Image (cartoon, rainbow, N blue to C red; front, top):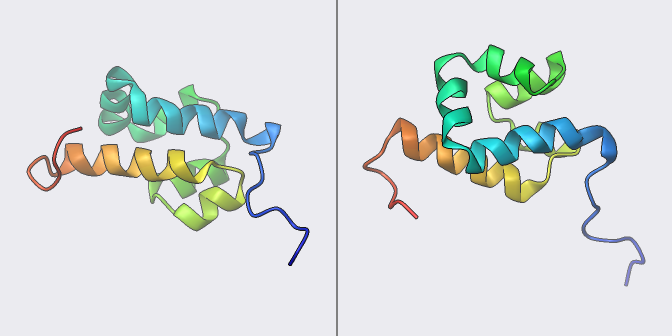
Length: 92
């Protein structure tokens, strides 16, 4: 058995990225701003160029490698997908 932890807490350096993902998951007003002007919404959250590029294409592996919490990446993607194609997923 390995002593290496399966899960690591996100680093402090990923705070802005995780805050943005949480807003995408939870804040309807922010989601609408994000959908209307993605770059401005990400800049509003203080994301750097690399984070913006990863989030714009919802690159799960890249976001997690930058310190994004996997649950927030999943939920943000789910919320955006639900809004893009409302009939494909049941609202929860």
